[in-house]
Length: 119
Image (cartoon, rainbow, N blue to C red; front, side, top):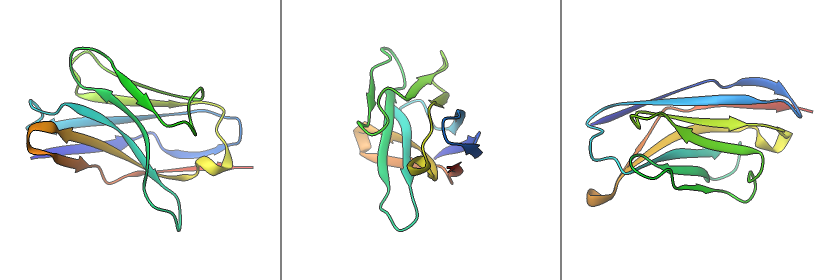
């Protein structure tokens, strides 16, 4: 099993910044990708960003946040960060940490952290 724990959410004014962290533990040796999704009220969960957990730091970023959000990880690949700048009210959502074990096509999710951007 894999456990994902998010931190760093909160309330911020539009134009402000927040940094989310996600720490992974458990059977993470075969996790290939980690990242973030978000879900706003009444909307479906949507992709935000992912990063390769080991080796190259290949990333993928949603167009809606490109240029404002940056995903990174520590050298061990056990913690993933989401630096969010120039936040907008439409970024308000619960942000979920995500991890994927490719060879079993298994996805893991954290419990989420609330990000609220006031106008």
